[in-house]
Amino acid sequence: MDYTNLRRQIISMKKSLFDQGYLDEQFNQLEELQDDSSPNFVEEVVALFFKDSSRLLTNIEQALEKYPQDFYRLDSLVHQFKGSGSSIGALRMKNECSMFKAHCNDRNLEGYRTLDDSSSSIPASHSLLLHLIPWLTLRCRRSLQKMKREHATLKQKLETYFHLLRQVGPPERAVNSWK
Image (cartoon, rainbow, N blue to C red):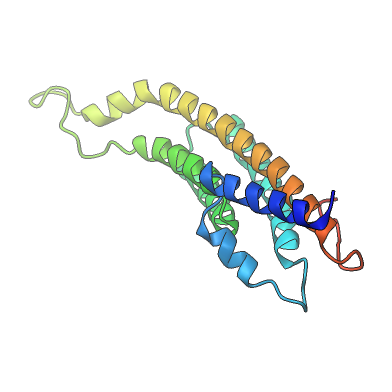
C-alpha cells in the first residue's frame, strides 16, 4: 500500500475511533506532546497504559471476588482505572468506569427513615442495603465485564492504529512497544 493510501487509512481510522466514542480530545492532546525528540511518545504512553491497566483490572476482579461488599475498595480501584484511561482519552472505558462507580455509590443509602418510625431501631436503609448488596455486586460484576470488553477492544484498535503509523513513519524510528 502506498504512503498516501496509508495516511488516508490512518486518518479514517482515527476519525472512526472518535466518532464511535472510543477516544476523546485527551488523545489529541497526548499526540500534540509528541515531537521529533520522542517520535513514539504516544504509542509508548498507550502501551504503558495497557500494561498498567491490565494489572488494575486484575486487582478489581480479585477485590470483587474476595471483598464483594467492600464498595469503598472497589470504588477506589475503579477510580484509579478510570483516571488512567482518562489520561489517554479512553472515553468508552471512562464511561464504563463511571457506571461501575455509580453501582458502588448506590450502596450508600444512609439517612433514610426507619422501617417503622416508632418502634424499629434498624434504619430502613440498613435493611434495604442488606437486600441490595447481592444485586449491587451483580451489577458491579456486569460492569467489570463491560470494562474488560472495552479495554480489550480499545487495545486491539489502538494496536492496529499504531501499526499503521509505524508503516508510514521512518523505519529507523518505528518501534513496536506493545510487547
